[in-house]
Image (tube, rainbow over all chains, first blue to last red; front, side, top):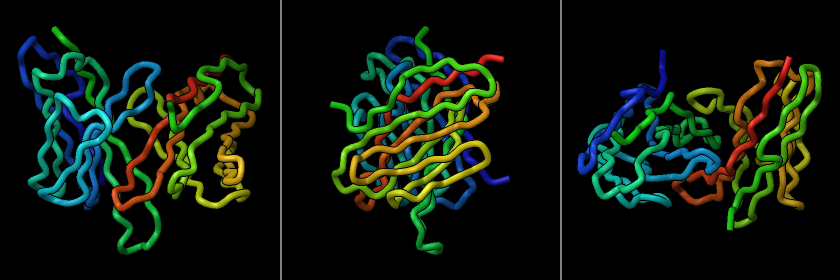
Length: 117
Length: 112
């Protein structure tokens, strides 16, 4: 079945450590997004990518980095510079609608919950 | 200042009740308004609204957009315990990147 797979489901980070969250999709979607969700805050955009080898900062990019070497993969690294990394991280993807000509919604993975040790 | 404002932030009802969730947004380069349902993990897509006054319906859920007053409502009739979730509203404010701006969500609890 096509979908978006995020791993791991739970992750613990030690002080000063970088950790990488995986996001893989087999939907042949061009655009991919990373969001952070905190209680009572809704979803906030960290980074997004519309095409391989290109990505843009979102609203809260500080302390995070991404890469987009393959269409199906968009990993997020939470660096030691991110002082408050405890949150639920959601990855999303979207078809660019070139075939259907219609505006397409974003679809989400099941998320990774990151906590500080 | 928040661009997308949802109300109420939380709501508790009994099974069988009808609920209305509200979402107001800013007009800058508006392209569409989306509703998602989030239970424990992934938000699942419910509706995308682009035109004013046209109701979208799926079973007991329906939604409508008012582009003049800049708001949308999500109605759920004959609520069931399985409707308990966070309901997220998001605005697609145009541009080639299709970025979404989310509201804080409405936490709906349906008691038996």
